[in-house]
Image (cartoon, rainbow, N blue to C red; front, top):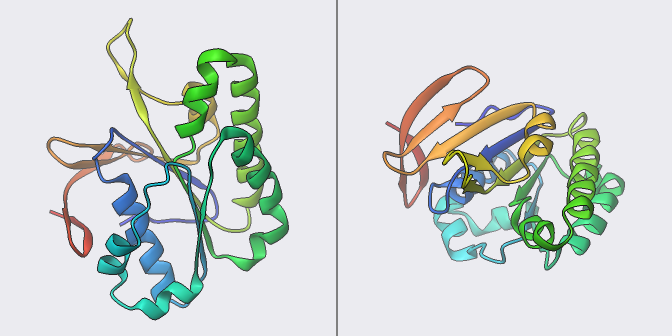
Length: 193
């Protein structure tokens, strides 16, 4: 469903819109082609049982590395170290880049923004060699009532391909092409309607 090339693709949308399922389906596509995937879980919610429903073959997990990140500082250190191991993987997925940022930005906005920019810069460099799929959260701007991606312009300006997911109806919007499709989530993953 996603055409992942050597750049940063950011998928954003509200909770329950299908971001993680779409990332799992993208992982499955790579694993089925005998490629290695690094999945970075910042929300501590990755379900191996759900992933097995999508990939169907437990042997594919041999090429899958799941790492869990507990804080924004830990996320910073991990991303800065990724360049050394980038050649071990064919796809890197970050689920989600904004989770720990949201906590820090409330108390130390300047530091949080510098760290987020630094993380995007490191991921951008890696993305010249292998695709990087970033999932991001959204929030409602209290002034404009617009739904906005966490990290605002930092996230927008450091993304090559932008994909928005809507919850009701389930819709995938490819922002770069201004195209959209309806989709549904099944036990096998994500399917266009």
